[in-house]
Length: 134
Image 1 (cartoon, helix red, strand yellow):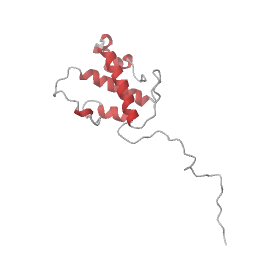
Image 2 (cartoon, helix red, strand yellow):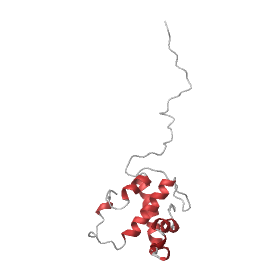
Image 3 (cartoon, rainbow, N blue to C red):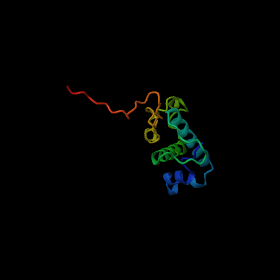
């Protein structure tokens, strides 16, 4: 899985006094966020590089993965509702920063990556069409 966010980026997003810099749980959160961001973009039709050291496709995707990791980290120990994974069924959770994560990762919409042209279906533009004028 690519590493689109890092522990340093998550600590920077959480703030200096968060205490996350020496928390071993942070490594788990970062790995899960990178994996989920890559998987959800793949399901949405994107063709991202699966190499371990591949950079994020753009800054928005990197920030989306970081925001996802921050949301995972802050959710630990939050007991405002019963435990449930139903909000992950269609990835439509509306709490925390999830709507922003969806926008930043570009998921929840149709594929936008360029598709290679099929030579059998691509019209030839080399011919010049002329109109006869009578």
